Each structure stands twice: as structure tokens, then as C-alpha cells.
Length: 479
Ligand SMILES: [Zn+2]
Image 1 (tube, rainbow, N blue to C red):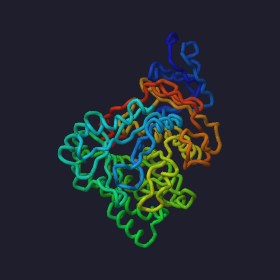
Image 2: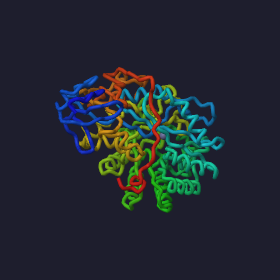
Image 3: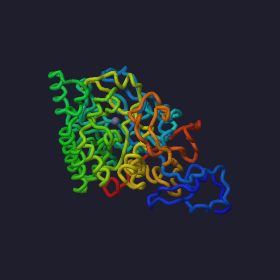
Image 4: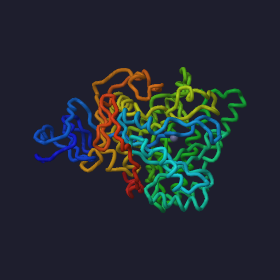
């Protein structure tokens, strides 16, 4: 050890690992973590660079398992819809905020092979996205037998997570909702090929009924979104989807953006029945309620399904605290304030949330500082559990010898109110004015310092696609 030559040593920080948080030195060789050592034990070693992390938190780079980059936005249904910001911009924002891995989506179409769809999506990422990345395969309505066969192949080839919607969300949209019969068929493919279903579950009939009813009553303002994308809708759909999964042994599911107490309870009960089901919620659902729709530019707080009541928010925090909910994602869609606020009705409000960048700082403040959640559990929520569930562990999401050296150094002394100038995505932020009790000061991606005190150093090689497979114990629900 005394003669080792390291690329980077991060010394004397509070290092968060699965076995606890201790003052330690992290040594990096090449792209990987070489080891974690007691403080000062590496003083004799040679290193290309040393960073003194005294007083800082040293944790794995964040993983956001639910983002949409260069994604069609707006409420129209045409193919010429404008797109959100690309992977170059959003990827830089993620690194700026301490997130090193993003999982986005590749849309499977009815006309092209899944292979062709994946290659088409690659064009948006390769040599552009500075973070490491992967895709969930987003299924469309009425998949053909050919698509189902290709899906099994894709799962085995390193694309194991499959997105399904149980609603079209807006009346003018079509092609997203997967009927019960097709869900049943896809679940059988997941069970057989070793995949994980990632689900946006809302009761489509109730959503469409309430949309039509409120519009007819002249109550179409977006402040009523929680009546359309309701707690009851989440209750009905979650229970239907989970019951269906229970009837196809071997189906493992990840419920995206849980937003209501009913969703938390449905997941909790399914987990108690030993169903392999995992759950995600979003920082915005943990901090804002439907009352925030009434603030100026209230659309900026909205993500589909919708913000709900204080009671729902409390239930989400209970779910985070008791382990029902494993991950905090953002459903990020980065667009201009003008695009985000263009629609003001329940039928045209733009979804997605500008939040990938401050996610770690905001959730450290909300979870660790305000609610006393442990540092280890916080790291699970923003990095490790996403890696475990999505088939990236222990390559990503953890500081262990041999893991990719994806690291964020968080300064817990940098407290204040989040201002637009603090952010790379500076045009607007729903978190502007929010009190922050920590801020990332260094981000390391595979051994390279890519952000230091706000300045980005993006390697020319950029990010890499992460092929994955879901471990058997995750698919069996043994966490
Ligand atoms: Zn989404």
C-alpha cells in the first residue's frame, strides 16, 4: 500500500458506506475505488491529486432513476411537439448537483424493432450526455407478439426495465395506456426473461371521467389537477396492477412517482404479502401540496400524476421512514418557464419537473436535517437503492473497493437560501428560495473530477451506457 500510486485521494471526510459513516480516506485508482482507509494512513502514498474533505460528507454520486431528457413536451398529440433540454444540458446540471447516473427512457414504437428504437435513442446520448446513463424501455399500447418476443431479448441483452402506463394521462393523448390483457402478457415476459416492470399507475377511466366532468363544469383550471389525478385513482390502479402481478409469479415491479397515501398503503400491503414490489416518490411530492398550484407560476410545482394533500405528503414521509418507499427520483423535464407555464388547464398543463440538479441538496435538508433520517438511509434513497433495484449495484451507488469512483463531496456548512445563480439550470427553479443545509462542492465520475465548486470539467469521452441485469434476490423481493 505504501508504494501505491493513486489517481485521487479524498482525505478526512465523513465517508458514507453500507456499514456506516466514518472519517476516512478514499483512494481512487483509474476509474474505480481502490479502497477506503483510516484517516492519515495514506500520507506516504503517491497520488496525482489529493482533496482535503475535512468537515465534509463523502458519499456515492447520486442516481436519478426517472428523468426525461430531449423529450416531447406540451399538450398536443402531434409528432412535431417541441422537446425538452437535451442530455448535454441536463447531464451537466446533474453533475453540478452531485448526480452521476441518470436513467431515462427509450420509446418502443409499433413500427420499428426494439433494437432500432434503442439505437435511435442512443443518438440523443452518445458523445452528448456527460453522466453515465441507461434507459427504461417504454412500451406502447397493444404490443404485437413480435414486440413481446423482442422485449424478452432486450431484457436479456441488458435492457431489463420496462415502463408501462395504465393511463393516457390526457384525453388527447393515445398510445400510452396498456390494457389489462397486455399488462398480463408483458408481466409474463418480465417473469420469464428476468425483467422489472416500472409502472405509472392511474385509473384511466376515472382520470378521463374527472377531466371531462370538470371541463364541462368550467372547473378546468390546473389548480384542480388533484381531483383528476386523485388519491382514489392511485388506489384503484395500484391495487389492480399489484393484484395482476401477484397472479403472474415471478413478476417484480417498481411503482413510479407514488403521490398519495393510497399508493403508499397499496405498496406496503403488497410488500407484506412478500410481493417483489418497490416504490419511488419525488422530492416535489414530499415538499409541495396541491395548495402550491395557487402560487405564481404554480404549474412549475406540477408533475403528473399531481401534487396532493398534506395528509398524502405525510403518508409519503411515513413510507420513506418505514422503508416502503426506496427511491427519490425527479421525473425531470427541463424546459423554459414559458413552456412550463404555457398550459393552465387540466387538459394542457405541462408535466415533468425541473429538479435533477438540486435533488441531493434539497433531500439532505428535508430528510436528514428536518426529519432526522440517518445519513446512510439518505444515501440509500438518493443513490444506493436505485442501484440495487435497477441492476447497477455494486458498480454504482456505493463506495466499496472495486466500485466505479462516482463520488460527491457535500459541504454541510454551506447553508442558505437556494438562488437561481446557484444552479446550472438557471432559468427557473421550483426550489428557488428553498432553505438548503448542504451543497455539493465536488463531483467525481469514474475517477475524474467533473465538478469543483461550481465549475464543470467534462471529459471529452462523456458518459457511458450502463447495461444492466436485475439480480435474482431483487426479483424475489429479498432486499
Ligand atoms: Zn416520467
